[in-house]
Length: 560
Image (cartoon, rainbow, N blue to C red; front, top):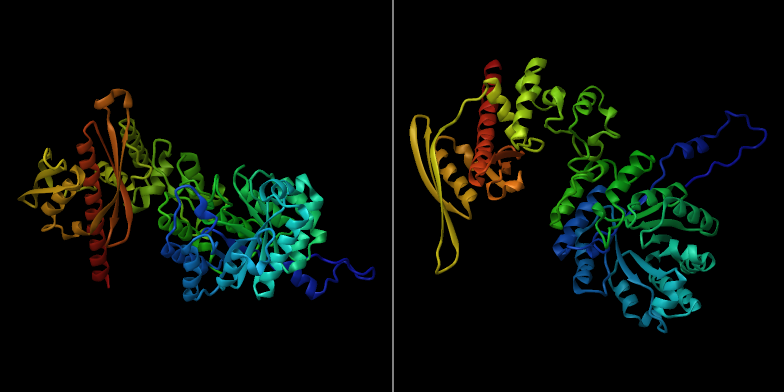
């Protein structure tokens, strides 16, 4: 962090040198250190295979993360294997980091298995965690305060002399400094004097407030000659705020995990930290263009870790730039920043207009007006009224955009059915001998003047129904074979009605031709009928949009 020196007395107010101007206008670089592959795996329900870890490491390198902590090589064979395989990735930006603890008490570093494992990992950087809080030294390690200082110094010196860049993680620093500031500082100086290049201050219990973070870092800065880092946990919901507070008072190295996964309430979310540092504090992070890949990286890590994305996650969540209230939608249509603190595409996300009874005519216009050319206010209000009527019946169109479009088409006379249903019939049979239930669905349709009568089984009535419908339609509309069901959800709307309650079925589809993902909704007392309605909407949405794209293409060809 630069400081502008006082000008000589003879200098006038406008005589700043070009060097001072350059210093003042340069964006300070903040190092991002990712520990998803180590600290993140300590989260509940998170387990990463060796392949998973390598995939995530490659993705982090693509956006320019500075350090990737791969794990603790002594703890398990998978982490040790990671350090062998990560060298083959030939990372372009990130530096792999092996993590370990200080040497054991009463043991020389070159005799300590943990120390030797750090060196054998052959990473350019090692991170050593040591005790800062005298409570931990006496009651957890059960060593003297002086022995702990020696353990820190010996471990850092050993790795530094082996040619490694050493980052020292001062565990429980803020609790330790609050309890015994003199000793906490001694632990930092022991690491610094032994050759550590960065002193990373850890709020390990996640209980500090930003004011404490700033106060304690300000207090130790005059004594520290190397980089100061910050590692925060989210037990008070302040991990990102605490990291930003540290940067404001001089920290230039920030540790966290993608999506904030980690033990207990999680680590600091490196995604939110990167966005805030760049967009709010004007710091340089990642590589040029890396910020616009944050949403992609966030969702990639969720997918690899088999976790459900958090819709309300800042910057990158599906709801981060979603607008539902009519007043909000109206304002955003006029001036986007009126209800968006940053542009969605600055972090690779996109704006979403949610359709519901709260949307107002502006919401209808924004969502479907341009596609169906309905800028007339009276028509918009008519569609809104129809929408409100449907939502009273239990339909929800916030995420069922395909069903909402079809609802509008039907209301406006822009809909032509692709077939006529004669009947469907579903039968479930459970064989007492093998105990495995089997479902069979029969569908009879009129398609282009022909009768299609098909039967199919499946892993349940919805799967069987989907297969039967495709069989009935594929000779007439081959595109139906390129639509895939990727999610299916059921919710009871009025549970007080018990077994007679209405259910809402939501289905998510992937169009393999356009790679579009879209959703539909169906509501009925009969779960199979609700599923049929949602399934039909998905197929018809695909067909009607394929038809219009084909017509548009042919029209352009004629014009040319």
